Amino acid sequence: MESEIAYARSGGVAIAYRVLGDGDVDLVYVPDYMSNLVFAMRYPRWRRFYESLAERFRLILFDKRGTGLSDHGGQFATLETRMEDMHAVLDAAGSARTAVLASHEGCGMAALYAASYPERTTALVLFHPNVKGEAHSDPARVMAELADLRERWGTRELADEILRESCPTLLRSDEDRAWFADHLRVGASPAVAYSLNRAFFEVDLSGVLPAVRVPTLVLYRAPEQATAHEIASLLPNAQCVQVSGDDYLEIHLSPEVADEVSRFVAGEPAPDVPDTVLATVMFTDIVGSTETATALGDAAWRDLLAHHHVAVRRALTRFRGQERDTAGDGFFATFDGPARAIRCAQAIVAAMEPLGLQVRIGIHIGECELHEEKVTGRAVIAGARIAAMAGPGEVLVSGTVRDLVSGSGLEFTEHGQHELKGLPGTWSIHEAR
Image 1 (cartoon, rainbow, N blue to C red):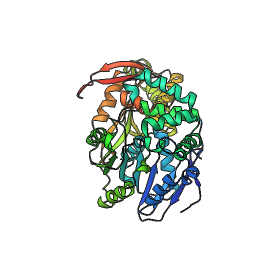
Image 2: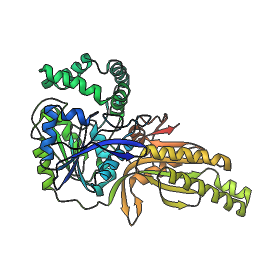
Image 3: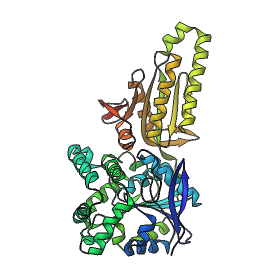
């Protein structure tokens, strides 16, 4: 069962993909960390896994940006950029509605895609997903381990250590050990491996999972039972199924995965497009607008305000933001990714300088309700409250936003823990620099 390697264009980056099988239902597999579409098909374990899925589905495989046969595209890609890459692959493969299967590190991007594009996702299957990376509990240890990983990436010694800790089944065979070491080498460079692992350790999906409304199946092996059920409890429409084996890595070692995925997808009717969606919200407001309007007079203020609106809308267009509301001197916009919202906010702040204006901006990501093209809900309220806290020229974001843009190159300073009026709990706020 072979197919040609093709390339989907995501911006200026080429993403390698191939399609196996001709089933009536499309299934895309989001790989763990790295992959290589040619090399994997030459390894009997992966080939059998892909073929078992292709017997039941029209299977779409791809190498994530920076891995395998795909372009790198400059600096390491954030979750939202990799999500857009998968979007481009599905478009190129002619898949309008797709079941999504992901494992380990790929689960974060798959969950983000399902929450952001529920109208295109028929079902979601996650194998050994993770909610919060270890960097949140022990950052010093994680950074030391990442530095060691980058230094020794590609060595047989490191490959054997990974298998010893996470997949002892493959450690028993010299052939499997050799293949795994080569799999790491052809899958990712040391820099990409470092960036992928760092993003995985820093991400926090606790704010994303409740927004996944499509039917979801969490697959796990016995040692991961507690984690799997904890994650399923955060998903509104999820169930758990245990599969064979005790290893943490390598989904292909459980031969019944294809059957479980097939049963789950076939047993769920195609979901209606829900009235909630995961979105990044951004609020902007001119600082000192009343005083400025009084000093300038009505005519001059209207002219300045018009220039302000043009600059904001230009930035929204550039970063694919959607204007939702304009009230006086402020904008409410939504984005399908938090990194793009932050860069848009920074562009708006810079565009105000020639006009002699300063703005305050707040950004949050969360589940939003859709009512006749209007976006409402607690996430919207949180975004507005965060914006109100910002000072002149500041872009403040929630902790959820900061965690989801790991690897983007954006830097933040702590703005403390705050209570947001009308919302429960204490919120971690950060300033984007």
